[in-house]
Structure formats: C-alpha cells, structure tokens
Image 1 (cartoon, helix red, strand yellow):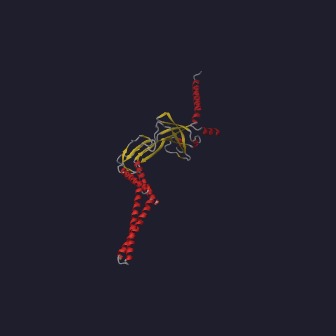
Image 2: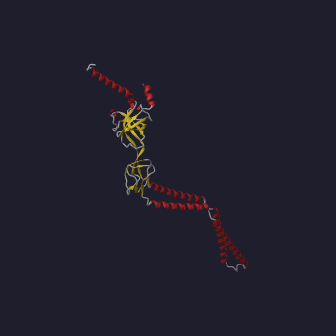
Image 3: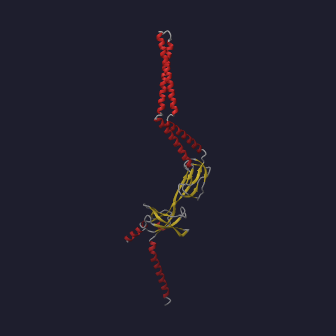
Length: 341
C-alpha cells in the first residue's frame, strides 16, 4: 500500500469510529435528562412555649435526634408549687361536690328529727301552760292572773310553735338534700379547678423542649441561664426526611418527564456512588432562571422548577450541596414522544 494512502485510511477509520460512538450513544444521551441543582430540605425553629430561664441544653450542633427526644429544659422551680396548689384546690372542690351528691348522713337526719321532736314538745308544753292560765283567769274573773302574765304565756306559746315549724322545715330540707342548682354550681367550680390544673400541667410538660420529628440540629441558638421566650428559638432543626434536589428545566424538556419518573443523584465528592430518587414535584408556572442554575443555555430562559426526592439512608446529602440529577423519562412520556414522531 502506498505510504500516502495510509494517513487517509487512518483518518477514515477514526471518522468511522467517532460516527459509531455518536450513533451508539445518541439514543442513550437523548433518552435521559441531566440537570444541575442543589440539595434542599425542610427546617424548623424550635422555641419554648413559655417564658422562663433555661435550666439545661442537652444536645450539640450536628447531633442526630429522634422524634420525642428531649432537647432542653426550663427551670420549673416556681411552676411545681403552683401545680401542687392547683391539685389541692381541685381535690377540695371534688370532695365538696361529692358531699352535695351524697346528701345528708343518717345521723344528720336523726338529729333533725330529734330537734323537731324537742321543739314540738316545747310547743305542746307552752300551749298547755297558756290554756291553764286562761282557765284560772276565767274562774277568778281576772283576779288571780295578771294581764302581763297572760300575755307572756301567749307569746311563749306562739314562739314555741314557730320554733317547731322551723325545725319541721329544717327536717324537710335535710331529707330533700341539696338543690340541683347547688350541685351544678359545684360541678362548674370543679371543672374550673381542673381546667386550671390541666393548664399548669401543660406548662410543666412544655418545660421540656422535644424534637417534633427526626432530624439534625443545625444551630444551637441559646444556652443555660438565658431567658427563653416563645419568640426566641433555641434550636434550628433540619428535617432529614424527605430530602430533595431542586433543579430547573426548560419547556422542551418539561414534556419528557412526569411525576414519579426515576432519577439518579450524584455528588461531586462521590460521582461513582449515585443515590436513587424520583420526581416528586413539577412546577405548574414558569419563572426566570435563578442565579444558582449552572448551565449556560438556561441563563436567559424561562424554566420550571423540579424537585427530585432522594433516598438517603446514610445521610450523605447536606443542605445546599450541589448535585447532578439524571432523570429517566417515564414510559408514558417516551411513548408519547414516539407517537409524535
């Protein structure tokens, strides 16, 4: 073979190789969407519900916490005596209501009957004394009994009758028991006492600041001895589940994906060990390209926000970390594209 033909053959073989590589990888490249984004997650600030000095702060920044774990405590030195006082007040009101509901004891009823019998006996005696004086006065034609003695006997008889009637009414009240209104009033007073007690117990429980969900302490903002208020958070908690990568794509790429489309997320620190995920959110409105988007062709375009939720059991992703998202279009969108062709 002439020497001048060899370079031509080499160039032709290289061109064929490049063409073959392009043809081989064209379908795979076009079948996937590669986006650049940043890791995002939810974050909550945790203040106490009441104002008091902080007694303990139990976790440090970067600590992984579980839902229900106690993170800090308030000083309860002044709250505990108030709880004890409210418990005693509720107990006293509870016994007062039970006393009204049970009514009079048998001994009290017997005492009321005995008092009525004594009053009736006194009234009978006073009436007999009055009748005797009147009989003597009539026989002596007013000479044996003075008018003053007769008037005193009449008054004594009337007084004894009134006392007997009073004891009769007292016995009726004892046998009837308390009024319904009195019982209802005692119930209302007991409800108020128990409500005050429940409020103080809630304040006592709120003296422990607990994690509302699993997460990682991002910031420890207050220390023991500081005055906590509902307006001052003690911690900033990053919720580790779910995590997602926020990315943006163009309108042409938007038609190629759907909710639930599988995706891979890779980090610059470990490109060979991707994480799995899926498309969990696609914005319905367009927006101007944010400054964080790193592709040049999108810098002046209208784009749509996409969130790819990621499975990260080892907690490798950090808030704000850049990540590369490779989305595989779903079967429905792929079939739609084929039918359009």
